[in-house]
Image 1 (cartoon, one colour):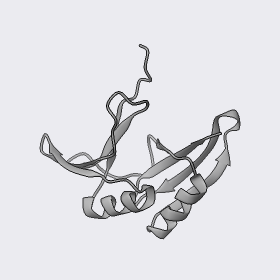
Image 2 (tube, helix red, strand yellow):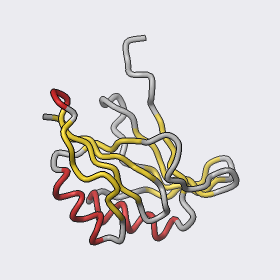
Image 3 (tube, one colour):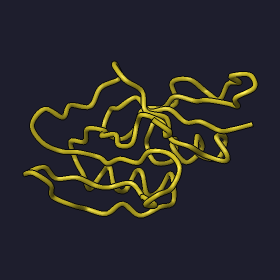
Image 4 (cartoon, one colour):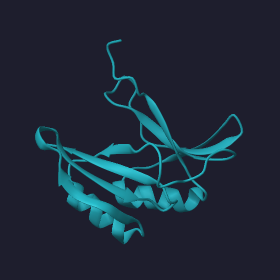
Length: 123
């Protein structure tokens, strides 16, 4: 395998309108609504052949927001600015920006749906 093993992630959402507003306000990108296999979803931006994984917000049976379990980290160039936008959009910061040594910085927040999500900023 010559790529990273993760290529798609799904974050549960109870209210896709609220979740769309939150993520678009915080990160400044557009999320595209879709229906796939009977599930409603919003897709994060994707560049075919690009580096890294992408994913979506999913609503439907078996998708329950949680502060427990796997943490997905979203890439950013400026954690401080994103943390500020998270608070303005109604989210919560659980672990403020902290160094992870030579790799950069992380932060953990709670989104509008009640998911624990991470931020990652390279050094």
